Every structure is written in structure tokens, then in C-alpha cells.
Image (cartoon, rainbow, N blue to C red; front, side):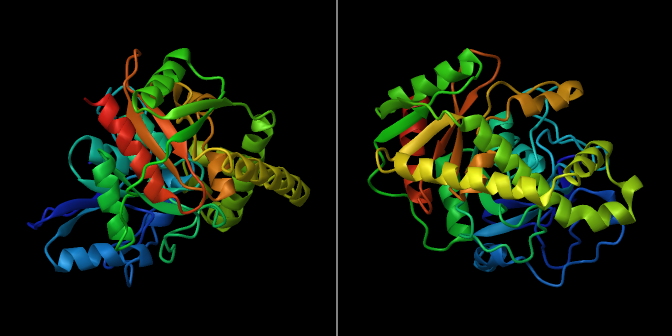
Length: 373
């Protein structure tokens, strides 16, 4: 049961949909994968706003709720290791981390226990576990999917998005979140490939997948990339501290050591540091705006390496790459597995302008067709 917080075994028809236990489901408590939250959590009075499409599909017999799935505690971690509720088992290798924070969502899909899972993404929490478990995940444009009834991490960065085994599943998941959504008929063709210090096996796999799909690949460098990553994490951590400071004060012993340590470190971030980070992020947004005048999409490895063993979970921070800056820019991004010469598939992250989810999935379909043939 490490994958599931609450499983629903009742008979039903249609797509099996799992929901990250950061999202309210009427009649069920929302635990955020934390004993500090679970001890006083009451059944939600109503569904989160993002579940409207799912409820409509359930009423028509087209889908069913499989249950609520586990996560990295408070959605504030990228390994997916959870000491309180257990760690979902990575089906590629049970010794490896599943990735977080949407660990249960990724594992439920990767093991075939769910057709679609909803995750949340504040700094990579859909894309990172998708990469670790070799599935597809879509981080949506900030503000596109309503967040009412979703427990916040950092509200200026939080998003909800679908996770599935393939592009078709993501498209279905988006149509549940946003009825009427469809993949663009005309796929993007020009992609800027960001030069970044990744495992050569991962870099080669990403480059090969883009070329196999027939995309026009243009190498690009961003001199201030490290500054953008650092600034994005500063804003994320400051937001997470504001969200959870009262919880930490009330029940410090009920919060896992890794999350507690991270929150305490975040408490030291000053207003001046946040203001300086915002200046850097403004420049980063301008860089991306200029880039998207020249190409359709930006590509980069989702993770800079392969998922570490559970005992080395902290090593995840060395391979997280360019995820948090996408949230800081408010842009959508797709994580998609691609073949690699290493022990596991690699994952390519495609980033697009605001509200380009339909084009991201169209480009992803080209890559998927070329690499799965």
C-alpha cells in the first residue's frame, strides 16, 4: 500500500484515475503524505475545482476514481521517499527512488494500477517522478488549471497536471482537467536544445530522440542558467516556508526529518533574497520570451542522470536540472521517456510558451512515434 493512501476497490467502468493526496476529494481526508496533517485532517466537504471534469466522466461511466496516492511529505521533496506513509516502489528498480513529489501518481501509472494520475508540480514534482519511473508527465501553464481545493506548497508556482504512460494518456488526462482539450494538428518543428552538464548517456539519448523525430535542433546556451535555477529555488523555498510555518510550529515531531530540515533552512531566507531572486527570474523570463521568438520549443534532459538508490536519495538534488525555473516562468513542460544506453530510459523535457500544452503534446507524439517504433 505504499503507493496508495486510500484505494477504492469498488467496481466501475472506464479509465482508472488516481489523485495525488494533495488534492481534495469529497468525503476523503487530504493528508499531504504527512502525519502532521493527517492527525487532524477531516473528510473534504467538496472536490477540488480541478476534479469537475473527472466527476462528469464518472457520472457518464467513462472513468472511475481509483483512489488517492502517496507523495513526498507535504509535496516538498524530489526523491519520493516518505518515512511516514512508506515509499512507493519504483517498478524499474525497487532499490531506486521513485522521484517526487508526485511519487504515488507516477508509480500507480507505471505499474498499470491507474491509466491516468493527477499530480502537482511546484518545482518539478510531476516531471521528476515521471522521469524516474519512465512515464509521461505534463506540467501545465501556471493558472490554467484551477487550484481551489489543492493544498498549496508555493502558490505562485503550484500547478496541477496529468501523468500517463504515453502522450495519448496525457491528452485524455488534460481533457478531463479541461474539457475540450485536444492535441494540436500541426506539430512544432524547431527545437532549441539547451547545453547543460548532464550524464553523457542522458544527453546523447535526448539528442538522438529529437533527431529521430525529424525536429530541427538548434543548440543554445544560457550563461545565467545557474542563477536562474538558484533564484527559482529561493522563491520556491520561501513560499513553502510561508505555507508550512504554522504546521512546523504546531507539530515539529510529526514532520519527517528531511522535510523539517528543509523548512528550517527555508525559514532563514530573507525578503531581500526573495526580491533579488525575483529580479533574476524577470531576466530569465525575458530570455525565454526572446528564445521563443526564434524556435517553437526548448528541450533539455528532465533529469541530469539516472535515479539514485534510496539510501542515496539526497543525490537527487544534483541531478534535478532545469525544472524549478520552468515553474518560476509559469510555462508548461512535458517530460517524456526516451531510449538510452544506460540502465534505464532517459527523459526529455520539452518546454513551450504559455498555454502551448497542445503543441507540446503534438511534438511529444512525434518523439514517441519515432522512438517506440
